[in-house]
Image (cartoon, rainbow, N blue to C red; front, side):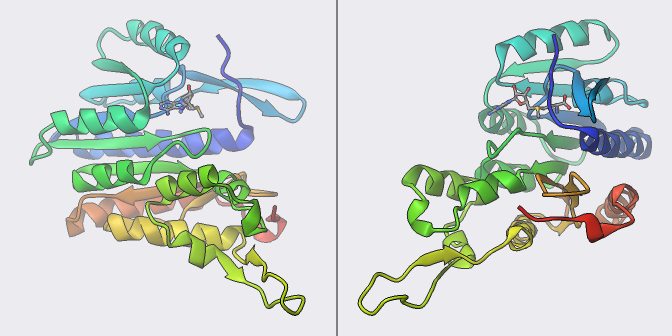
Length: 285
Ligand SMILES: C[S@@+](CC[C@H](N)C(=O)[O-])C[C@H]1O[C@@H](n2cnc3c(N)ncnc32)[C@H](O)[C@@H]1O
């Protein structure tokens, strides 16, 4: 089966994950029982487009399975039954890895899974959220943060948020409003993104328009994450050139100073190494 999406920037994202997982299990495998949790696991490989060519690369599930030293438990979630079938075949090739495949919506499955694990002194996890769009609910991020034991990599759908916030507020329907509120966990985005413009005509209705550009949306999301997680790294904007589609965030839920220092240092180093050296090429929507 083929799983086609993304471009060369998808490789940047997955390399970031690969490097972090390697650091993580190497640093912590003697002290803790380590879990890898993938909310949007895919099928184990991805076909990306590079110019006019296609390239097959390892997906997040295979990257996690092949991480050495290994994770003690790998939990792979996907809502597609077909993808779940592919994940089962993938895991069958690695009998020495403990894989658990969960079929369902990531928000629900993550909540159920995190409830079952006793996040005491011994359990630690890396959790990867790699949705196509705005599927991740804010309440899921709160549940993750409450464990105080999970390092989160979250691909936030910047362009999805941008598309769902039309320039004219009147073009916004209830469905869109609810989707944004579910994604950001607050209604304060309305005041932050929109402003009433001065009346154009005497006695005419005043127009409410979006004043926030994509970098304002980004700052808003980063601030929101910072309210729930003790520390959030500056994200990697993807793709590195042209109109931004996603922001790859790293956030740590463990409040311990030592944990924050170590994980942040490594995550920031990896993220920085993926930044383009010339940021002038960054465009808007
Ligand atoms: C961008 S792909 C993930 C790719 C994967 N991380 C990789 O590197 O190969 C998104 C995946 O999420 C799945 N998906 C979509 N909505 C979902 C949801 N609400 N809960 C769980 N999985 C979902 C899709 O079936 C798809 O496999």
